[in-house]
Image (cartoon, rainbow, N blue to C red; front, side, top):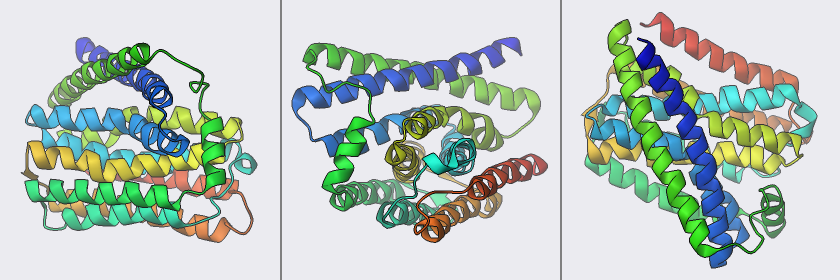
Length: 318
């Protein structure tokens, strides 16, 4: 039992550390190659913070445990909004500005709606994976189109100073080091989570929705809190929105392509519907608070309550 718990803890630690190194290498590489600030900030950082979920999902699918990857994607989306954003708002509400436009928040909800309809037939097939990745490509293109020139400057300035001249070889080395750590961490986490589920008599789906989902949301939590305290609201909000788009489309695509499987009605009505509901809640909050300019602690409290309520619902269903 101790070995299993240590495996989960070490796996989570390596995942978070690997994601950090991946950000270092990816942003440095983008600077060395002259990729635009917009692509550097939105695409690379968004992908990097979703990398733990992506690798856990792919790793679990390759281990013939696709339900763990599906649960991880759904649970991470709920954790990103309920826990990460809710906690950030509660800690410093007036430092976290509401997005001036609804486009990117609406894009996140659209991604969740696509995931909802893909899973509606209780089957995740290869064709669903192809559809999810196609929608992801379209979403990224639209996200770039929605971004404005002034937002690019703010997003770039909120990143660590990787824009200074760097060695291209060093950037590539750090990038692949981060990827290797992510793979190792994902492997340890999947192994530990599956074994823990067996020991406790809990299904892999429940473990994925709770322990693994929260653990792989730690990079989003760190990035968002840093963004808030540095008064970079776009990083905090954009990180969550971008991560949820990747989770809904790229992370769910992994089990679809690598290990097509069925899901239960319970997972659909409890987890998929709850995920979509939380996304719609965020869209409503942004719509209501847009004129005021910043979130209130009440908004953060509602989000945290939604996350805690979900955890209670999941554990009551065990």
